[in-house]
Image 1: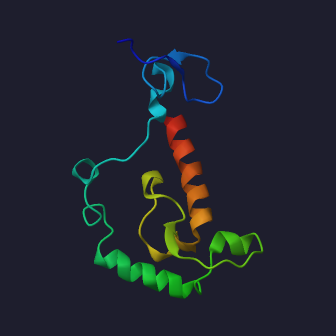
Image 2: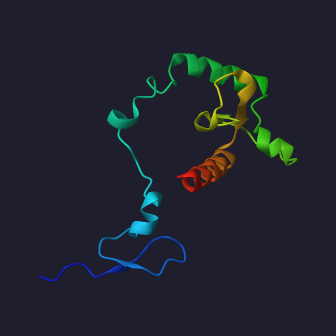
Length: 122
């Protein structure tokens, strides 16, 4: 039985062909996916336990339940999440002055920008 047909690398603009679906060796760093809690630790081990839940509620109340990035763009959007203004990976802390209420679309966009910056540092 023949093997799978080669496919192009998933990196935008890369013309290399790979035998396994995914990325070529040059763009392998883009393989970011789900990681089990055994490797990355539970939410409590990562610092998102009951203390975080209380702080999250305080920040949502402080910001009036409104997305702060949307407010800066002169839009009014309900916030459902709390995010670090300066990410913990870049030296941010869990201090309330480093936390903001944020809506899901803004949070996804901000996380994507932070991930892109992290990939360029590698």
